[in-house]
Image 1 (cartoon, chains in turn brown, blue):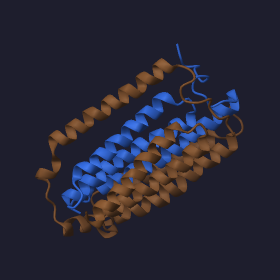
Image 2 (cartoon, helix red, strand yellow):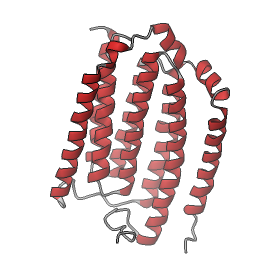
Image 3 (cartoon, one colour):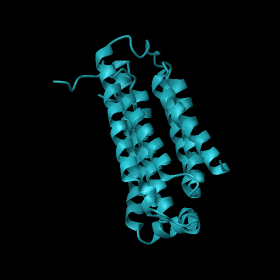
Image 4 (cartoon, chains in turn red, brown):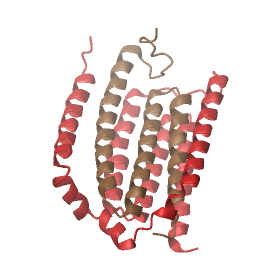
Length: 171
Length: 102
């Protein structure tokens, strides 16, 4: 057991447990808090994968901006808590869980059958180099400059759209 | 890095995706449904970063950057839509929001 494996198991356990907590809590605010924990665990996993830039952006954008947006909306709407997961429509919900479990079994089967670590043997240096902000920035501003500009335009459109939709008058 | 087999990351990602799918299907609060969608987007991001890191190729991480941009835009517009619906119907329960249902 080396340190990377231990770190992976700790972070993966946090991510798995919090993701289940997100969908099982009755109170939506608790769901949001567990989602923040999940995002932090994912940021740790990204660091473990030598993706420094993505880890930092994960914390800033997801755990910072998006979750603040979620919590603000929860605070504004002040929704009632749900009665519990299995009080009504038990059949449909049980069937939904069955379907997602089936999808998970399929995915796990394919992953183990494909056995990707047998064919992929990247060296550590290439992996570290791939995750630096220098490499990603170089790709973003040369090969992917048009998608980058489109992403900026998309954010502008989303800002205007959110303003228009959430405005007081909606007749 | 080679200490952790690649399959472990992929299994974790598949698990988080399926939890997100289950959340979308069983929860009735529209905001929690949105959180489940974020969960699914994040699991896809984890897969992309895993392959990018193990291949030593940073294109996957560039794509994760774009996924995050779209997720931010989607969260902003979606929550604005939820606010607009709440203003009209005074609920975010998706069983009550069925005016498009034939």
